[in-house]
Amino acid sequence: MTKKLLTLTVALSGTALAAALVLPALAQESLLPEGFGNPADTPAPRPTPTPSQTPAPTSAPKNGTTPPPVTSSVGATDTAGTPADAADEKGEDGEDGEEVTPGTLKYDLPPGARRLLTRIGPLTPETGGLAPDAFGVRGQYAAAIMRRTNGQFASRWGQILLRRALVSAIDTPDTINGADLAADRASLLLRMGESLAARWIVQAVDYDRASPRLVATAQQTYLANADPAGMCPYVPAGLAHGDEQAWRLASAICSGLSGEAGPAGWAIGRVRSSGKISNFDILLTERVLGATGSGRRSTTIEWDNVDRLTSWRFGMATATAVPVPEPLRTSAPANMKGWTVLAPMTEMANRVAAAPEAAARGVLSSEAYVSLLSAAAGEEEPAEALAAQTEQLRAAFGAADGGERYTAMQRLWGAGTTPVQSYAAIVSTARAAAALPVSTDVGSDPWQLLGSMLAGGYDANAIAWVPKVTVGSRAWGLLAVGSPRPLNGTTAGTVGQFSGDDDSAGFLRSKFLLAGLAGLGRIETGVVASAASDLEVDLGKQTRWSRAIMAAAERREPGMVALLAAAGMQGEWSKVPPYHLYYIVRALREVGLASEARMIAAEALVRV
Image 1 (cartoon, rainbow, N blue to C red):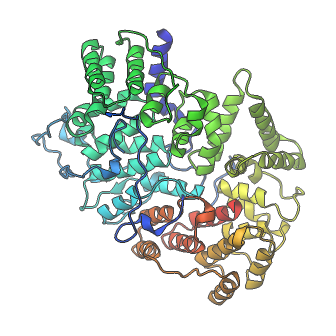
Image 2 (image 1 turned 60 degrees about the horizontal axis):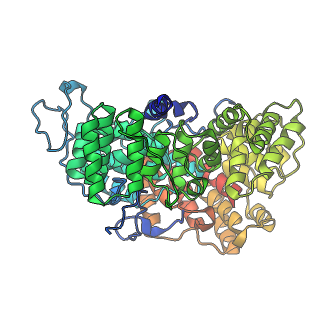
Image 3 (image 1 turned 135 degrees about the vertical axis):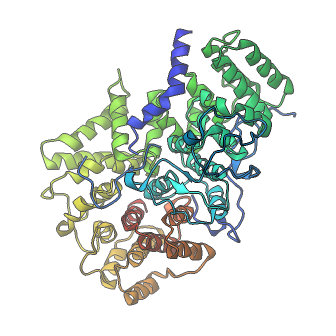
């Protein structure tokens, strides 16, 4: 029992510890409102109902500069579909005598201590965030795009930029309740795997001002952070406005944490007798109660007939150190891999297994990824593969000879068996690559070396290699779009040389190079037209999405541009149309995010 109590204590408070490690999908037009289409929303994972059935920073955005970092999880619909029926509470005064909505609690705080709904988010321009007006004044429009974005992006830098935008302290437009907009921001962050960032947004709103949509999102957020106690302030509102059975289970946990075994047992009994919730999810809840000392009996958890890992199961099992079978973890949604890495109470082996995807997606920075691997290797009897990987990392960072360091990097880059693992290896060596002496013999096309530097934002280090690369090579292409300043001699001929060695399907890499150069304004219009004709690509194609992102750029709304850019890069790079990349790079450059635009363009050339 002592061990269980210790585990639960770590689970309830350990999310903050993850900050020590965290420094900080098909592109399709139909993801946007007003004619962009209505694809099915990605449902939040939930328990299954039973049948009732460092180098110095450079001019590029530093890797992971944002802070480390939906609906009811049991038998409820996705938060994106929850009606926004709460009254707007953006009052500046927070009057003492304001009416309390049934099913909510009232803060016993003076008005001056209340947080306003007019500006929500922890990251200010002084700390790396975007300006308060970054999303403009069309709140419902922004929220609709957030709800229709699935969170699975081709670009790692696209995710890093969007996370930064979503956690910025932004003004709430008059057209939407601030709590509802916060709910949509947090829900998107959860779908991105950014559980810590989602928690920051949820906690930026006083719980008694949470709308029904934010109450449902709060439950998902605290499950993603394996923190059952975090749901407790929202229980009254959840019981009044949300999925009654899910919140009744939460109320049982909160009663148990308060030492009230009677109400906890009564709530569990009510849920079980309803027959609406899987008995397995009830057993997990009882496991949490047992860890608090309020359970009447020990609970054995067997996963024999469980076919998927939901947010409830993830949160409850992680909080109580219940081992999750490997097949369930492997088949879990991609965003849950991010939750796993960011939950410090998770077994280290499971965090390491999920880390490559988290690093490739941008949930982990290069430094955080290396720190996690180092910590895992420091445990007793680390896995053989992990020991070999960390040994190569040590050589990449610390070997006396530059050639030995580069050889170690090459071994790491070639060890991956999947594209995700290969790119994660490139991410892990970013600082080592940036520190490699330019005098090192790396051949005439060190594209992985330069791609590694740019994965960490070390563009000033990368440009020093210009004299070492062959014009028209893949490494040259990376520098052509990723360097802080344009390269001399970028013409249709050099683009043609690049495409001559292009082994990607349909010359996609060459099309991305042209799109990046055109979006950055580094190639003349006539040259763009000639090269586009040769490559049979239309970079000027007009769609609702392209008009929307360029209109946002004209209005100088960097947050909206970042959101639309991410929406245009859902899925894998192989499915992103070249004209999407062109408009993304161009729009980002026009709103003052040229560094991010360059990193996204360079990443595309590395990953296709």
